[in-house]
Image 1 (spheres, helix red, strand yellow):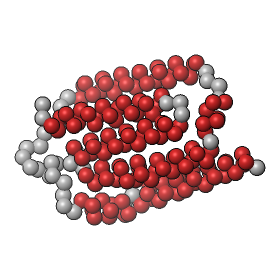
Image 2 (spheres, helix red, strand yellow):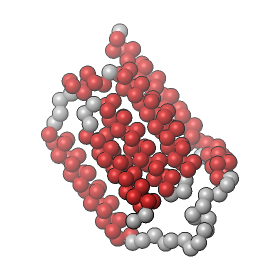
Image 3 (cartoon, helix red, strand yellow):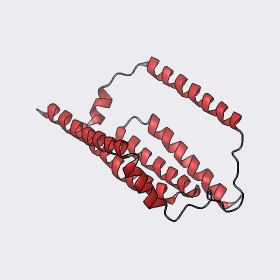
Image 4 (cartoon, one colour):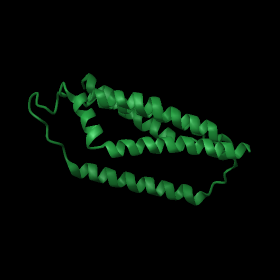
Length: 172
């Protein structure tokens, strides 16, 4: 086994374990912090796939900006108190476990049927990223995907404003 395989296995295990911790964590702040570690594991996997720009975006945008926004919203809404007051039903737990097992079985079956992907020969364009990758990505983002980019910006702004309005209602 080479070093790349070991790093891949460790980063994959890190992402999977902390994503499960995020799902089963009762406290929302700890859940968000587990999601940060999951994003770091995914960033390591992006570096291994020769996509360093995507890895940097993963850390800066998702782990840095969006999850900080999530933490602010959680702290504004004081979800710790609401989580303690909430009544849990056993049927939701069992239906969730059933859905996870079904989806996991479906993904496992499709993965086993897919076979191995074709491997490019030599140092083709699939192995080494282009030197002008970032300007091309910026051009595509602000031309072809401008509507989706702006819609995401508006959605995040509305989430922050909604959290502020909900927190003000509770205090008044």
